Amino acid sequence: MGKSTLQIPRVCPQCGCTFLAKTVKTVYCCAECNWTARNEKRKQERKQKVLDTIKATGTEYVSITQALEIFTTSRNTLHRLIKSKRIHCSIISPKRIFVCVKDLETLFPLLPESLVKANAKQSHIFDMHPDHCYTIGEISQRFQITECSVYKHIRQFSIPTRQVGRFVYAPKTEIDKLYGNKKSKK
Image (cartoon, rainbow, N blue to C red):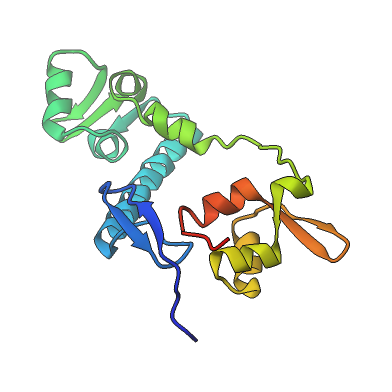
């Protein structure tokens, strides 16, 4: 297989630096940023899993260890809040302390609103008129990519297409977003 000639300018969502992506799938600038983002996603999934199991069982109180897994706080902070009576607790023994989940949720929100908004996808209606679309041949000539790769990217990124006769049309806005600011040959 040949080497990719794509060079798509992108901004790394983890560190914020700009880089040239050599594939359409590339999101992060380096392996370290990819690793960090993947670990953050795993931590968030673990927190959500523990919280879901707690809510499924219907318990109002959790151990301090479980609270540390769910909420972004330290053990000392929890003990300080218990001592100042800002959160309700149930002390079974000095090493077995259970804290109220509802009190912790009010003090430490789980998901920032920006993440909730980013996860909510909105449907988009595309103008599939041939004047507002590229044909597959035009895309391959304009961005110097084989037609096979164009079809692969269209399927992979769920770009809508419309076939009229023997021509397959894809919206210009989506194709321009996909291949970024790559210099096109007109």
